Length: 105
Image (cartoon, rainbow, N blue to C red):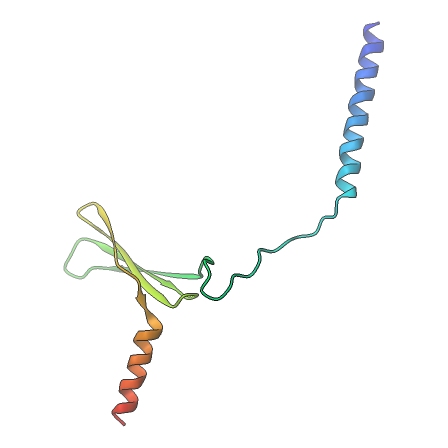
């Protein structure tokens, strides 16, 4: 009796595993990319992170450049507290610099 119950339990387990395997084969396995964000959307940026040291101090700064949004920010440790700088729009800075160069010609 015990042997018969064990055989039927293994048969049931094999049927269950076969059903799971067939279910995996029947489902389409296509990769789906995230939808493209609209301009100005809330898409994660591509970052360039540059470490730097403070001259004459005992702290360090990490500059963070968001190449997607064109922003520069910085973070540093001051008195064991993390301080952050408000983002600066790099396009505005470089446009003003290009305009000043043209005015000086």
